[in-house]
Amino acid sequence: MSRITLDHAQKIMAAAFAKGAELKMKPLSVSVVDAGGHLIAFQRSDGASLMRERVATGKAAGALAMGMSSRKLEEIAIARPHFIGALAGLAPNGLLPVAGGIIVVGDDGYPIGAVGITGDTSDNDEIAALAGIAAAGLKAQ
Image (cartoon, one colour):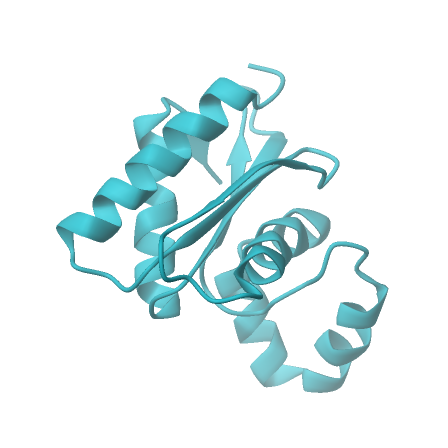
């Protein structure tokens, strides 16, 4: 697998929303980006607030840009807040150092894209992202 496709993105979003409904999460928004951080697809639940596309995409693209999940970026932000603050201004598609942004890797272990979810707690956003990635038959980093 050398890239993430629109079909993958649609499966990821459907499964993430299903997981959100199963766990009675607040309205979720899901962004799927390719290996270059370009948006492939975005979808939001009814009732999701206005900036959710930018937040979800920032989680996904920021994780991809730094080569680690947005949860790991959060750990760095706690230890080195000035670094993450400065870095966020450089990230063309945003960078949000909270859980919910997961890198998707191909069979060779290299990134093929990322998923970002927002709307509930960051931990729940990450649970939905992982469920979506697995349902699409893909691997999380």
